[in-house]
Image 1 (cartoon, one colour):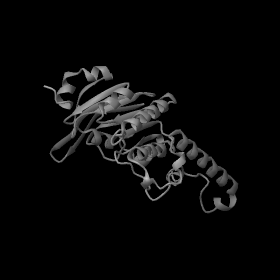
Image 2 (cartoon, rainbow, N blue to C red):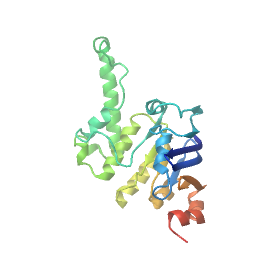
Image 3 (cartoon, rainbow, N blue to C red):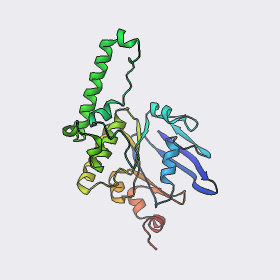
Image 4 (cartoon, one colour):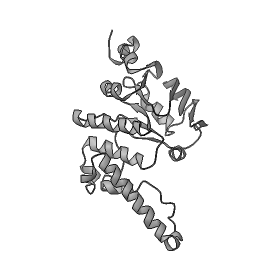
Length: 249
């Protein structure tokens, strides 16, 4: 589904990412780990086209996308979250999700000629929003402002917001960061449920326990280079990973 080939990025004289190759197959949960400064977020930013690469190639659904735009790849079904959730803090949870889906009937003349269709589509969007909020245990807070949510709830709201755009693959940036153990268990359950429903994930996180629980395969970066890949068990036993990521001798 997603193939990254020999991707590199320089910032002046600093090599942030060097010749990284990885792939994510449909229905997989793939992890990306590494110490601070390893190049994980830079790699995410290039894959989601928020940052241009210096060399290499990105393919999504058998199509080369690295010369495209973030808006275009979102339309193709590649979406990402951010370590610090973004959105509309002064809007309610309902409003945060209702602003996401475009209404194909909207427009100056459509207001007069397609009123019934617009009303029907808005009702469908509202029903979808309510369904998602129920799935993520946020429905009781649907009318609260997003700024009043906990860090974990904001991350769940961010997931909901991406799901409103019908993604084929989601890039999750530090979904476990700032999440207490009880909410983390719920986050695991939600991600595994979404995978069982056909969703594909590429996930960055420093919480190795979380990564090992949800991932089928894991890549490890250090100093911008890929140093290991494999199953959670293989990664946990890898001496290079222990040395650079866990500080083992």
